Length: 129
Figure 1: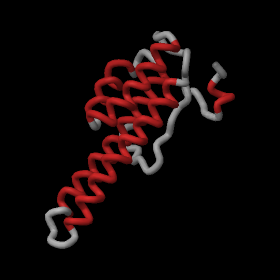
Figure 2 (figure 1 turned 180 degrees about the horizontal axis):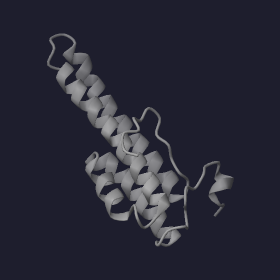
Figure 3 (figure 1 turned 135 degrees about the vertical axis):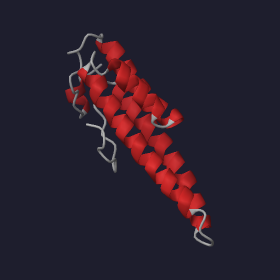
Figure 4 (figure 1 turned 45 degrees about the vertical axis):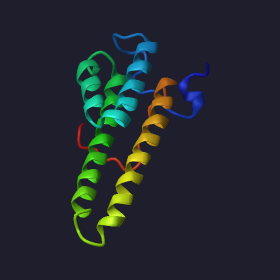
């Protein structure tokens, strides 16, 4: 397998932690995939458990957590907007579109993390630093 630099991405601290590189990639992938399935709780648990053991998992867990918080804010806003007559129909459709987009981005991020490439979500608020 090619090193991350040849894949077009960058590996933030891959191989510099206490975990093996395979474990780092797997934990980072798990943070992203759990985000797609369990909202911000999945990445939060992985990030809190492994952030001290690996710079790569720290970076990717924080990235997944920030994106899932952004999605949760969007879902909450759409939930409130859906209560408005006439506009609510569009908000319900946007709610499902956001859920599908979240899942797609989480899968893409998980695949990149499994290769050791640091993934950056588009349109994510950087709330957790």
